[in-house]
Length: 259
Image (tube, rainbow, N blue to C red; front, side, top):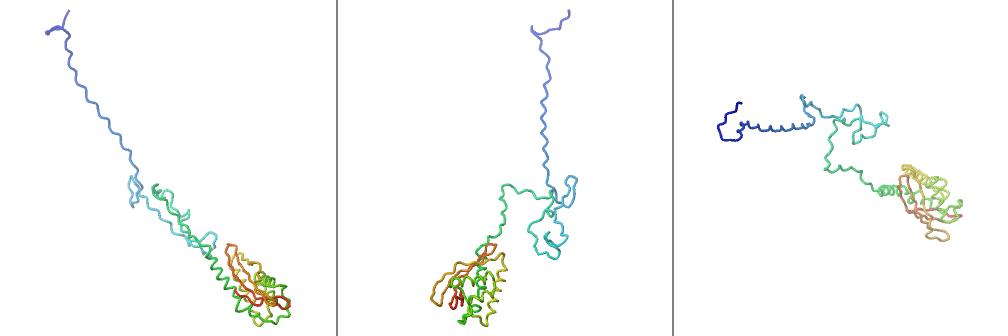
């Protein structure tokens, strides 16, 4: 039996040395995710970023006009915004605004004062009612009116006169309710035409007045106050206070009107 030589003291032999392990390899870092760049607006192309030209509104093919207008009748101005067919394509649309910015302020039309048209309407209305003095009606202030029946009372005379002038707009009917006709009888017809033309310049004009109020009266003369109002469909109105001088012959007749 063969035995390994042993030169040292008794016990187990020392194991042979082993090589030291190599240090662990470091973990390679992850590759960063590339961030996409916005489209380039340069005039030259590259392999990675082709040039994207800025959007330009196409030139108009003709003068702008509303679709309901025919050639030669173009009166409407272009709107301040682009129509959908003239808007930039979807890929050229500007980026949305950051959420921390204030929203754009809407441009509201200026608030119109509804009293202003009424003021203008009143001025024109009073000017048109110039028949109330210094002309048509006052020229009939004559006492030679025995041939006219007149109205049974002053208030009725004024109401019938207003109906003839503003509602019927009939000069012949109005002449039968005033003092005897004179050489200026054509002025009353002219003023009634002016009232008709003035009212025709507004949508849906209508005249109305309150119940005539007899302010002063004796056996042969009376003063009657009334307010005439003109209103329109677009809610504009104008009022004028009138005073009528009414005399009594066979009946009551309007002889003078003042505003």
